[in-house]
Length: 407
Image 1 (spheres, helix red, strand yellow):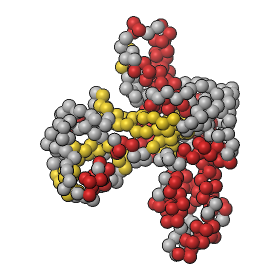
Image 2: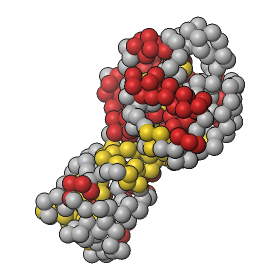
Image 3: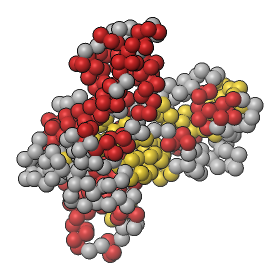
C-alpha cells in the first residue's frame, strides 16, 4: 500500500462551500456536514480512489486485486485525502481558526479548492443570496492566505539565510530547502521558483520585499499545485461563474458533491449500479425506493450527469493525481509469465508513482531490500529485460529481479 499513499490531497476552501460533502462523497467518511461555518473543527482524513482502466483485459486474464479494487475493468487505487477546515480572510494572522488549519496544508502535496460556484456564500462562509458573491474573489483570497502564511514562516530567518548563502557562495536553494522541509518543499521546487522569478540566486540580500513576495507566491504555486472544484453546479448563476473561473490560470472542474454523495450512498445500499466517476447509473431495486427518491435520482441524471458527464468528484481526484502531481500507474508482479505474486494472485497491486520513476526507484518503493539487491527488471508486455535507469511508463507491468527476492 505504500506506493498508493505516496501523495496526499488537501481539500481546502472557505467555510460552507461543500468541502465536507465533497470529502464524504469521495471517501464515504462520516465527516460532520452542516450549513454553518466551522463545522469541521478538526481535519478529517479518509481514503478515496483514483480511477483508471485496468490492464488485465490486455493480457486476457482475470485479476485478483489486493491493494486496490477492480470493478468491470475499472481499477480503483486508494489515495489519502485530508479535509481541512474552512479558511477565512486573515487566517494567516491567526483569525478564525487560523494557523491551526493552515498548518494542515503543509502535509498536502496538492490542493483541491472547493468553491461555491453559485456565489451563495460570502467571503466569511455565511449564506447570502445566490449570485451575490463573486467566487473569483475566493480564489484570490485563498492564494493570498497560503502565500502570506508561507512568507511569514520564511521571513523570520530570511536575512540570516540570505547572508549565509552569500558568504558560502553556494546559492540560496539549499538553505531555503532546509528551512522549508516542514512544508514538504524540495530543492528543485525552490530552484524552479527562483528561475521563474528571475531573481539573483547569488545575491539574495538584494531581493526587495516585492521580490520576496513574488518568490514565495511562485513557490506556493509550484509546491502546492491547486485545481478548482466549482461546486453547487446545479444552482442558478453557477454555469456563468464556471466560465469566468476558467479564465483564471487553473484547471476548473464543475461539480455537485451533494449529487455524488447521494449516488455513492445509494450504490452502497445496492439500490443503484454506480461506480465513482460514471456518467450515468441504473436503478437496480426500484421497489425499495420511494417516489421522491426516484424523482431525486432522475433529477441528478438529467440535470447533472447529462449536462456535465459526471458529478465531478472523481474527475477532481483523478485530475489532481494524473495532471497536478503527474503520477502514473504501475503494476508489480513476481511471476512475469503468469502475472502473479508468490501466492498466485494475478495483478494483485497497482502503484501510483511519479512520472519519471525508474525501475530501480520503483523497486525501492515496493521494498527497501528489493531496491538494495536490484539486478534488473522485466517488462511483462514484451518480456524484455530493462535496466535500473529505465523510466517506467503508465500501465507498465513490471517484475523486479533482485538478489533478495522477486516481485
